[in-house]
Length: 165
Image 1 (tube, rainbow, N blue to C red):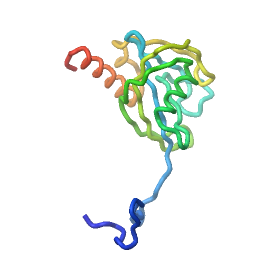
Image 2: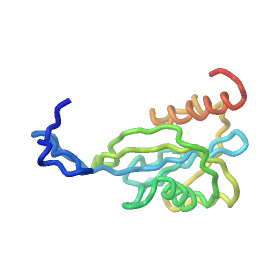
Image 3: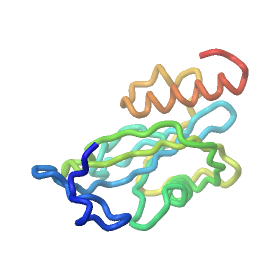
C-alpha cells in the first residue's frame, strides 16, 4: 500500500501527515468500573447536578487525566467515588459516546473489578447506591454500553464456572 507521505519527508517513528480533509480531533478517555461483590454489582445514581446523565444509574466512571494510565485512573476513580478498594480483573468492553451538553467526544473502557476492602462511601457525584444481583443485570433499563459490559461480565462468570453462554 502506498504511503500518503513521500519517504523522504517521513522521519522514523513520526506519523504521516493526514490526508486533505481529514481532521485530527481531541477526545476524552473515560474509565468505567463494574464492581462485583458476592454475585452483586454496585450501581450508583448520578447527582442531578452532573452535566452528563444526571440522575441516571451507572456502575461508576471517571475521566483519565492527561498523562495518567487508564488503570491508575480506574483505581483513583473507584476510591474517590465509592471509598472501596478493588482488584481489577480485566477489561469488559470499550465504547464511544458524546458527553454532556457540550457533546465532547469520548472513548470509554469498562473494567471488571472485585471489592477487597474499604467502606462504601459516596462522593458528591452520586446520591444513592445499590447492589444488584447478577441475575437482574440484563433486565435493567440502561444504556447499550452498560448492557454490553453486564453481558461480558456474565459470560466471564459462566466461563469460569464451566458453563456455556
